[in-house]
Length: 414
Image (cartoon, rainbow, N blue to C red; front, side):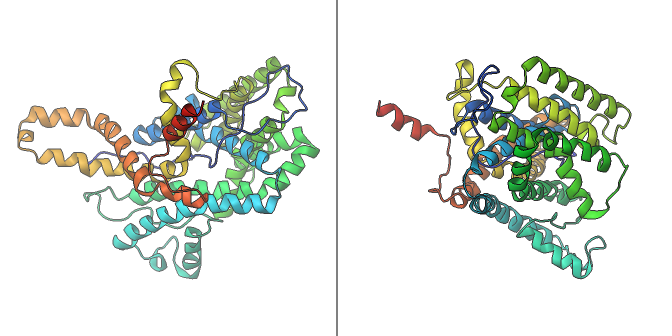
């Protein structure tokens, strides 16, 4: 007896290593951040990935308010991109694409194998058929648009419920959004340095137009522009963090304005609740303003940690691992959530399940078992295909890059 798995949402990771933390509020504002890892930002990325997995397990809309992981991730990616653009833009863009695309190709190959094995034919798909449907398959190679997939495939009573394609392949929208941000970053960073405040708030203004129904742009073009508007503010906030602009703003002013923006976002959401209630993924303007304010506060209070302090230190290896495998974890986690269902359902064939008490106990704790099982499955996937991220980054392939070996070497040399 299968259980429902939440459909894919607009939560996603940023690729690459994080930038350093913000200067103290009273530090000279004109000094850009120095390069290097900041464990606070590493920790934020790890928390966002965990939140994404939990959200897709349980479908709790309130998690998009408690921690808007996608806005956080786009801000971290924007900060990293601004730091990288101290080098020639063409090489930076090619490097980002090289790091991003191979892990997506591996995932896309697996997804297409399962789609074709399930009987999907893009040329006969009513939503993607014809010549354009075949051309759109190129998005599995270079995702300037969203790759096509069927919304339903198979039998509701089958091994997986028939909505598995949208749950598994749907998160590829993020690759498209990230790619467009990377391509646009040289121009965005130039505009930010010329008119920082206009560039910072322009995406919110655009969201108020394209994310509220004032202007409706149909199809994939509309989705691309909407995503760019909703999360563009967070991406440019990454610029502001990296360039030191946020340090110029008195903390009380930054927090006050952020609180007003976040309050507006909740007020707007209250009058535009979607099918999942307070899930901000369904309410673009609320998502944009809440995420923007949330990220400003996180960055205003950002400590600069070269090591995780105190009790957080025990999570150091997992934080390092998740940052080194962020793309792999994000791309595959919905597949793995769904894979827990047929695995757990095997328990119903055990002889003891003839007793109604045991069967009812499994029914009651089904989501608990899914939550417990998905993490070792993620670990297995990290070992199986995560090394592709190393090849894409021109690094030696590693099965479990949690930083332990490097730290032992560092310790022995002191």
